[in-house]
Image (tube, rainbow, N blue to C red; front, side):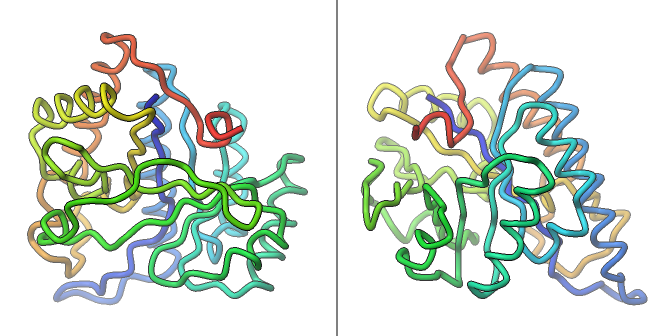
Length: 250
């Protein structure tokens, strides 16, 4: 099973040699990038899970409704929100959608599982930092979903052959043929492959001059759209199964 997921969050990098890029402009970039992702998913009729960063969720209500109306899952991405902010955001989005938000994803700032369980989340999908050296730092990890404190803990996927993780950076930098082979071989060994991308990777960095490392701007923007399109085309051609996170876990 392929679990395709997207982290919807504003790019945090500072502007490069130009006037400051406002919060409103950053939010507009995030919206436009997400709409590009949705168009590609629609073309291939593939459903995914969208992890919306909690601090901007209230400002993206129309976008969140559009994502949900197309049959995709809405979950949360916790950048640095406290428990009360998560609780308020969860209630507001659930009222908006009239659906339960089941999942939450964390990276640097991780709340205790007991706290997340108290907010009636059903699963946690934690991720690690991804930089140019990251793929070579950890060569072994558990890839099975476990139950802890009443929550399903979904690990990041890693290729048992190349030992590369399926994080945002690996997708962006690897040639698509190699990435497809990696997915295919992993599915022979593991029950699922969890893929995650960030909305900011679809930014046109020639148009928006953010100060980011050169290797993070490679194959971004339209090239990321083309890579996602190529991956989904291949998934359908090979008749590989895909699922939203909440459907696969429950």
